[in-house]
Amino acid sequence: MRNLLLATTFLFGSVSAAMSEGHLTEDYGWSGLYVSGHLGYGTVDTRALTVIPAGFFDLCCIASAGGVNHSADGVVGGIGIGYNFQMGQFVVGPEVTIAAADLSETTFSTFDDVYTTDLDMLLTAVLRAGYSWDHWLIYARGGYAGGNVSFSVVDTVGLTGVFADKQWHNGYVVGAGVERSFGSVSFGIEYNYIDLESQNHMSGPGFPAGIATVAVSPSDIHTIAARVAWKLDSIFGN
Image: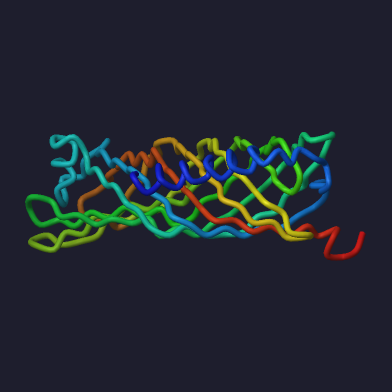
């Protein structure tokens, strides 16, 4: 969390420094189709709580202990596509991004079970709205977010077996960023906060102890990433 706060402080410090230079001109047009890439750091807090214990593993102990609580961090990176509409110095437009993530944590129960939660994909579909001056753009973004989340339990002693299920979780994202253009290419930094809904993960056919349902709640997802975007109309000379 400290790293995220430092990066966010740097983001807004960069914007303040640029604005203090007084270059409030419209020398650069942001309108048009673009593709983007981003690479950065993310964190996620995930809680798993047994809804229907199966009498297998330590699933009953998940409920009595208040759930399995994981705080994972790791690399997040992906690609995106969007379109900007510019009206004077105001810029607005839709954007869709998809990212691979390495946000996984494994812990051990007080008995013999091994719990793992993993967030390995993030999708956002948002509206960006911002203000431009000279070759700078500062913007906010918000809209839909979704993530691919898996939860597993491995029992290593006695009646051994594996509970594993992967589900798509829906939610929302809000964020902000700043970009600086260099011709048809722009570079920037972006912060996002994502919250995903709780989803029931269920044991599949053949689970040794019958049906088990675990409610998995990935929340408080923070990402901070470097970003590069290419204006396609500039590249193709339109």
